Image (cartoon, rainbow, N blue to C red; front, side):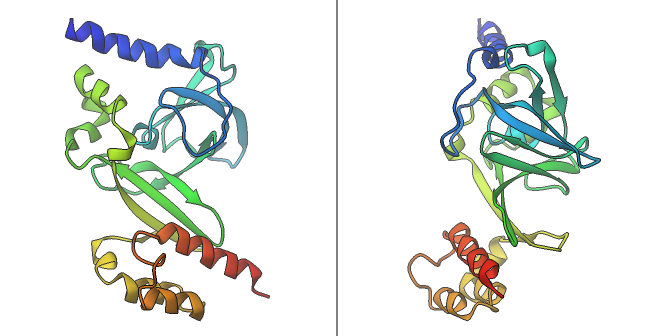
Length: 224
């Protein structure tokens, strides 16, 4: 009976897109839903269609592009080694040749949360279920658990990359332990913002990295 339930879960995942084309109105996407989007090939071409949103964890390993959202047979699976980037609804992922926490592959998709002169990325993982990172070796039970992961319970790591750079800046524990000093230094060319961070003003602490980067980008875009 247990395996019947597990198999039913993955049958639902495989067939759900046939009936769940939805209007995207926010960053929230239902697990197993399908949305308008595109993939960017290694050659830089954009191929539009509809893509499957599995969940924040599994979407870092793969994506499925549908030529027809009502035809499951039309879907094509892509890994991070096969495309540069993809977007499903409002969620944009970019491929990086880099291992992240609990990843076991050299190439992974990273969710880009903010675009601009400084791009902001988030990597999601489950600290308590490290085995779930080994996609190629998951049992049906493990796969079911991975698919049903509650996204709000996932851990995350944050990264940024300045325009023209090819290396990610990682906001790791070492960076966060001295956040006021390190982050104010990162935005030092914008003295007003750097000062807010340095004095630990409310709204400019280590839980506000996304907000800080947005404000920094707005300033950079206004510079003559």
